[in-house]
Length: 70
Image (cartoon, rainbow, N blue to C red; front, side):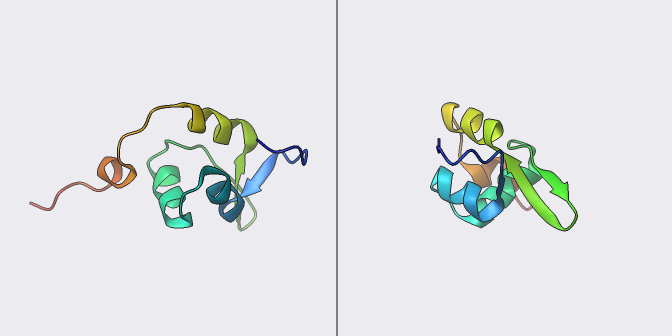
């Protein structure tokens, strides 16, 4: 993805690399579709996880996380 040599990206950086909003990235992390690591108070996403996610086909992000209200 990037030649910067970074291994871990902040949520903002990861969202930018995937061309999605930070909130959408949060949905992916909560639904465990995108693994993330907590280091102290920071949530970081591994470069390999971002690349693997970008290569997969996806359904609607919100449809997989939010269940309909009954």
